[in-house]
Length: 594
Image (cartoon, rainbow, N blue to C red; front, side):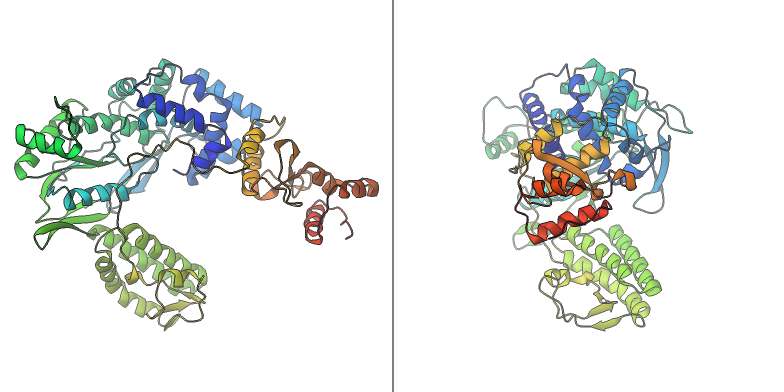
């Protein structure tokens, strides 16, 4: 999720780690509201929402993160707290986006920017509690887990577990059909027993959708808290499946290997291993008979316990020795290799068609504009495809098929606007030579070589390491202590954007003065506007620089005596004086002579 550094900025890591540890120990949480409305959590939520690409997308109230950024920090914190005292979420804006198949559309609900910040505040606190209770083979929308970990688990169960049957379940309209009352009860059972928190989450679920009214079920796709709530709903399913085989409680203690052997030889239980990514999940087992039993059992549990239906057309039992299963853009199958069966994986056929269509569109743009920008846009698609699908065992074959389909388009469209030759004149640090051999011809557009789609390489896929505590402190930096002190220092009449960007600048500069290079304690830090507010300067990140407080005096000083006295405190080099004068020039002040 990329939240580790922002959590450090606002000294919230210890709080999250403590919540995670207590939840692992089975503790209940009755006083979460005070943690949620703490100043550190509010400012952390602002930062995380701001860093999201959708922060500049307005909700139904037409406001974006830019409107929040201008608010005074104290006013912003008090405004958020006041909103929560008698919380009434604003209307959610409905947006329809195309699904991956291109034939239908998916509804997105975009909350107002204030509601997004509030949801992020709740996520910061509730996620560590839930992470401790979630099943280890649920991979969707969870910190440090990815689609590749889910695919790796399938590959592992075929290669090592010898599970050659899969029960692929598709829940019909899952996000639109979540039962609100059941979800709130599941939150309570997980250990979230603060009634104020439960009540506010209930109001979030009932936020009116503009033009549609108040929803009676479902979680809005597009809400920051929605993925966590979806995982809470399906966590009950995860453990119900797991407790019938993987975590079945036996009278005697066994190692994991002997546990499964004992269950196979002395019980009538059906082997079953869960892999879930959001609402896309499958159960892998060792025989058709067991697969049928799982299919009916899971269908019944979803319908009667979670009030959800399965899609009869999309849900199926697959013999992996005969047919492919399709999962997260990959297609996987068990193939004979000597006396063994191993997993062969490729790019899924539908995904290949999407990639081919996207690459053709990029080629048309290269023909139309014939500039470096259009060539770079094509390369970004190629590199993205190769990076995502490199964990397919036979990705090379899939990529060659894609190349074959677009080859004629490339030849017809690019022969007049590009050169076709071997790449030459590239340095070892060039991106092309890092990833590709120069012994293959490719097109050159305005000095940019097009990346060959067929030259992708496979990489071994590793399962997720289940022993990692993602909330423990990771790599720290020498300036982090001063960073936290800087965060806690009071700055009256400063915008929330300024206070947040000041921390970013301090961290980016590694706690050093931008002019003198001296390490700064929090008491010596001044954050200077390169272009002053009086000359139209803003609090944006690129207009700020962190410097020593006496260097700040030098930038604005006009009295020669003050300048000389302050200069005598530093042994500035010629290069450092040039930096100082550049900042003075932006302030419309005379340069200091060398």
